[in-house]
Amino acid sequence: MIANQQQTPLYAAVKQFADAQPISFHVPGHKNGKLFAEQGLAEFQSLLSLDITELNGLDDLHAPEGVIADAQELASEWFHSLHTFFLINGSTVGNLTMILACCQPGDMVLVQRNCHKSILHGMELAGVKPIFLPPSYDKLKQRYIAPSTSSIKQALTNYTEAKAIILTYPDYFGDVFPLKEVIDLAHRSDTFVLIDEAHGCHFSLPFVSVPSAGELGADVVVQSAHKMTPAMTMSAYLHVYTSAVPLERVHYYLQLLQSSSPSYPLMVSLDLARYYLANYTEVQYKQTLRYIKAVQECFVAPDYWEVEVNDDPLKMTLRIHDHLSASQVQALFEEQGIYPELITDRHVLFIFGLEPVYPLEQLQKRLATIRDSLKHIRHAKIDVDPLFFEEETVSLALSYQQMNQQHTRWCRWEEAAGKIAAEAIIPYPPGIPLIAKGERIKGATVAKIKQLFQLSIGFQPSNPHKGIYVYEAAEGE
Image (cartoon, rainbow, N blue to C red; front, side, top):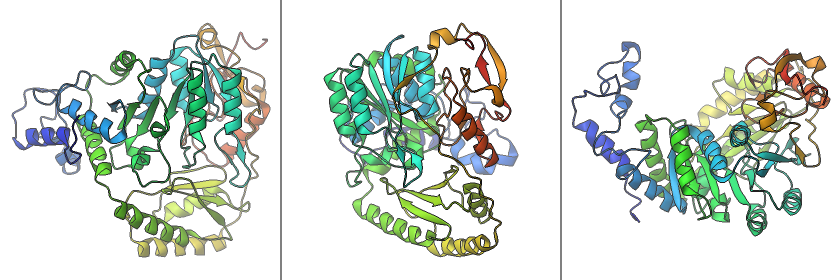
């Protein structure tokens, strides 16, 4: 085991190679940055020298034996895993892989209903039988959170044959739940615990109050390095924590799903993100918390919103009062060059970095302008009811195998209630489906979607405003 967390083996090897100014008769076609569109060359120049391919001494992500293996081993040591894998297709490929590696077609799995779309895609690819666990509704925060611990434990008791339970920890807003007792109960039934921890990479820091799911005993944990720590977009980690996980299947599916030409800049940024975390100090963290508290005070505007402090101190939510809409507030922020992470019908989410990066004085000046604008805004709040989720566990109306044998047709929203969806309808961000593929569509969900259209919430697919594809032959079932 490599012990020196000061090392950056992959970055060092790539940098040394680039500094030697090699003559390239290999891919990529930009030839170490010497061929590139002039218009963007100044911005890309320094990065292109690191954008190389699998040459001698630079290792191979799909069969690592050298510097990539060393970098992954350092990451494994830092995250206290048995094995850590670098991902260059985001947490999405990690979520797909952990499901495919741990489950077989027809296996029953428990999954929280408000999961990321990649979890649904992974279950579809694996051909499993999902049992959806209903989320809890927090009346104070006015949004759905994780399923209650009691409902998760009840499901584990009722479905002891479940091969895996798939949970999100933390949620997009940074809130967590008592995961340890869920893990312990699942393991008594030999049920895999698979965790989408996309927003929890920084939980590996020993002085952050929220523990990582890996520390709590989960079998597989997937983390986006780029969401909460300084790494490039699409870089992520997959951590295996228990020997029960079939590593050969993890290797296989990562080779199947990840690019055969992995990005060295992304892999290098994973090496450097681990280095950053391993050398980040408690003094830095306390300084950041003081900065965040000061920023929260700057945002206080009780006539317009409440400032919510979440379990993850790097997340801050504004809960917008009823006489405004979140889209109105977002527009005012963006007019002043302040860009939040996402909005819902009632919330605006802000994400901080691990260090202060913007002067408070600049922020205070822009917020003062926003407050002045709020005094004159025409209040056009659209009443939006919270989405209704079933209070009991539910399954899909059709299995994934049955869906593959069905024909689809286009259906207007006015006629969609009671039909079985042939596609998912997903507000993005956060990427949590309001309707899952194979789910029977409820009238309350259609009403919610129409309300969100009025609030200019973005959706995937990009234009579901007129209707949805449904399964044709299943309509009378």
